[in-house]
Length: 18
Image (cartoon, rainbow, N blue to C red):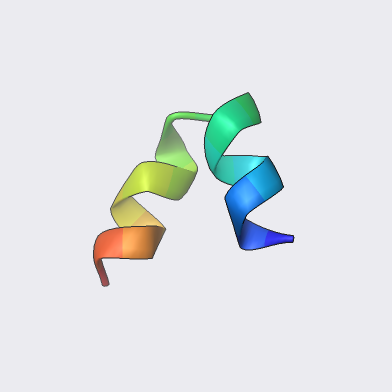
């Protein structure tokens, strides 16, 4: 789910790095 969110919202990008 995180991957899908990353594409939809840029904020997820920060979460992925963490």
